[in-house]
Image (tube, rainbow over all chains, first blue to last red; front, side, top):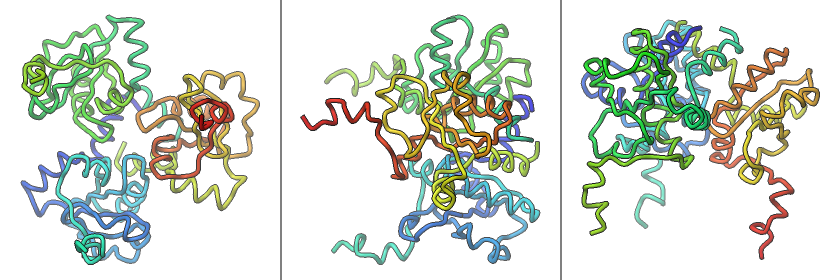
Length: 130
Length: 130
Length: 130
C-alpha cells in the first residue's frame, strides 16, 4: 500500500472530534453516534452528548436498534482502544456505513466538547452536593 | 492487507518526533516542516521550532510556497487530529513526498523538544510580565 | 483499501492494553512481551510487568533470545512512537507472529496496569528514601 492509499484509508475510516462536532451541528440527523465501551457503568458515566450507549458486549443482540439509513460513528476510550474498531468491523459486515471517532472520549473531553452524565451518575452521592 | 504491509505503510507515511528531530539536526536542509492547524491564531501560537505556518484552509492558494525538492513533514494537534492527513493527501496528489509527524504538537511538547512562540503571542499581555 | 480492510488490518496488527492483560492472565505462556525502547536506561526504568527488555538497537544481535513458538508483543513509549512498528517489521520478516501493544507504556500506566521497576532504578538515590 502506498502512502496516498494509507492516508485515504485512514480518512475514510475515521472522523476527528472537530469534524464530527461541526458536521453533526450542521446536519443533526446525519449521524448515529454509539458509545461502545465495555466495563462497569460508573467508570463510563460521562459520555458524548446525544451518544447512544451500546456496549460492544451487547451489540450482537441490539443490532436492530441501529438505523440503516444513517452514518454510524463509534467510539471507545482513547486512541489506543480497539473496541470501536471491533464494532466497526461487525457493523461494516452487516452493511452499515461506519467511521471511528478518533481519540474516543479522551480526545473529546480534552477538546471540552459537549458531554452528558448518565442519570445513574446524577443520582449518585458524589454529584448530589451532600 | 497483511500485518507486515500494515506496519510498512505506517512507517512509510509517518515519522516520530524523535526520528524527525534527529534527522533534521543531522541534515538541516532535508525537510520542509508545515504546521497545518486551523483555528484562531492565539490557540496555536506555540509551534515547532522552524515550522512553516500554512493552515490547511490556506493550503490550496499557498501551494507555490512549498518546495518540490524537500521531504514535506506535516503536523496538526495530536494523534487524533485528521488535518495533517488531509493535507498529506492533497500534497501527495500534487507530487510531493510527504510524511506526517506522529502525535502533532502535543507529542512534541510532551517530549520537551524545541518550540517557537509567534511574535503575535510574544506581544500579548500574558507574556510581557505585567 | 476499503474501510473494512483498514480496521481488520489494524486489529490484526495490534492488541489493546485491556485485551493483552486479560489474555496474558488467562494464558500466561501464550505471549512473549518485549519492551523495545531505546534511550538512557534511567528514563525507561519502569516497564510493563514481566516484559523482556530488548532495545531496538540491540535486537539484531539478540534475535536468538526470542522464542519462535509464542506470539510476540512489542511496545514503545506511546501511540506516536514508531520504534515498536520498526521492530515488528523486522520480526515479521524473520517469521515471527507479532502484534504491537497500542499506546505503549503511556497507555499501560494510564490504565494503572501492573508494572516493574528495574533493579538499577531501585538502587538509585531517588528511590532509597534518603
